[in-house]
Length: 240
Image 1: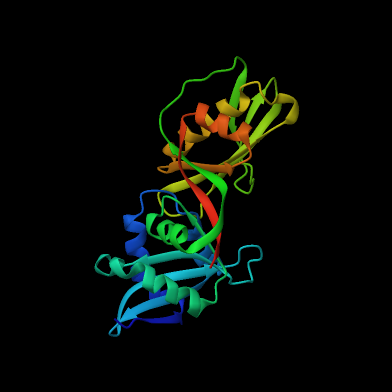
Image 2: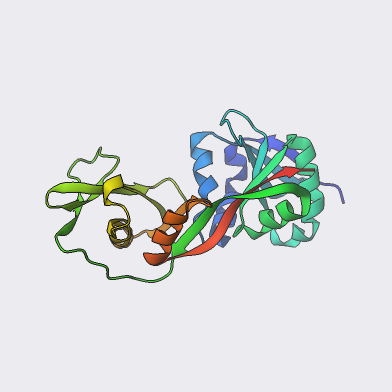
């Protein structure tokens, strides 16, 4: 079978991206790259009919286009995934593949095609509610709409942790970030803060998600304690 792979504009792959995101039941971190202009996109065609798409971005520098980060095919053509993926590598001249392991189609292509695969980050989804309290600790929302760190935990009038949300992922998911002052770490404030940010996300009609570096054992332990669970990894590999 003969397939065509052509570099196109973002609007040309929108129908396939909508289908991909409809199938996706997790936060897809590369979704933000399209609005930001950080990817080149390619349309996959068979007999002039579009059957899927792929995206390429820069692994280390955003202006580079050396890493496949999206790969989607309509269901009837997924049996040809490896062949089309190999052609995509050649057309895009990509030297790397980066993906979430819960994106099963691209993850399977990465595991089949790449070498020197490494996990860069751990992905978390919400699992259960918690009920932690610290006497005197308050969860505070900033009154300034321009405050990047829009939320804080305060104890006796002192800010001990700051954080908030990153909104530019696929709806309804929202990314949580936080930082606890060094002299207040390992005292339960981070877990309390994560718990309250999760609750705030639901009040905003969003589903909370988070991630951390695979080497960050403290963050991993905090997220698990705060009712999150591991749902995947971000992996990077060299294309053979």
